[in-house]
Amino acid sequence: MSAATHVLEIDGLTLRLPRTARPVLDGVDLTVGASEIVALVGESGSGKSMTLRTALGLLPRQAAVGGSVRVAGEDVLTMTPARLRDLRAGTVSMIFQDPRAAINPLRRLGDFLTESARINGGAGGERAAVRARHLLAAVGLTDRVLSQYPHELSGGMLQRIMIASALMNDPGLLLCDEPTTALDVTTQAEIVALLADLRNTFGTGMLFVTHDLGLAAAISDRVFVMYAGRIVEHGPAGSLFGAPRHPYTAALLDSTPRLEAPSERLAAIPGQPPDLRAPLSGCPFAARCAYAIERCRAERPEPENGVACHRAGELVLATVREGDRPRA
Image 1 (cartoon, one colour):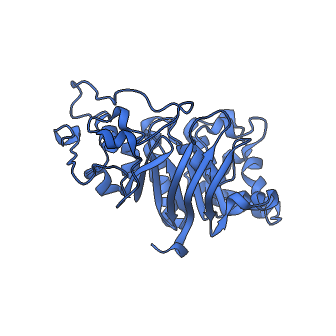
Image 2 (cartoon, rainbow, N blue to C red):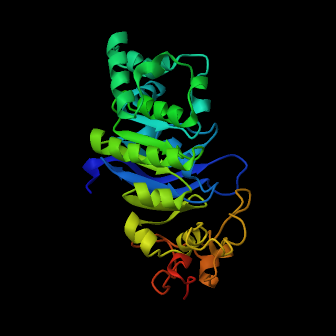
Image 3 (cartoon, one colour):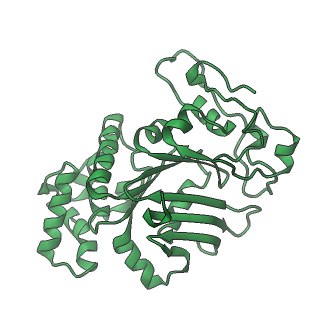
């Protein structure tokens, strides 16, 4: 996919915070194409949501940022506050994890939906309402909700409202920060199908942050695996999950619950993710990796052919899902 078709290009992104011994984000490279769904997966604290928020310029105070984050070819990190407001009003939108925290409980949902359309481009109230009704139909809701308050809707319905709101100004890039985490399984499946359908209908590129590997496999075209602020593996969803090349990716797949083996003890990755307050050398996963050698602890592996692992060329990794443990 050529750079011209990318709606998001993150190149060498680093982010440091005061009183931390290592970067929160450490050389992140990632792209999202038009009409493409890209999943960003990893354990909690790996830097997924922070990466997502850089595309909106939502950076922590006193953060030191390097690299570039280009949305539709324009670097977000160098934008003025006024240009950032324009970007957030039309080019890129975000679906937050908790819709009840993102929607004002004191305002009717019709006001919430049409506000951005009325402010951006000066659309009249009736034109904005027509657009809102069209999007509500696209997400499976009736215009009755326009007169309702957030407390009158279920969590799944509110998440649909969030999706409709995010699409009000036809964004080229949609950022999804674990939008199905708080939903039941049935509603989650409906939202996933809805996002895939909206991608096909509106041609929107999506960056989908999740820790649910099954969900990532179901919805994404490509997957980026993140650990300790670094991308350790990336590739097409089918090949990455079918034949993982990094021990961390294989360990994540092993630890995913499986209906076909309910009596087995759930596999877990030993140890804890690296502490931001401690300096880090070598491979960030070395302390938890069964295949780490001295080189892994001393030398940082650089990405090669989509995987950052010194031993990627010699390990043959098979997951428990395939009836085996990773083996050298």
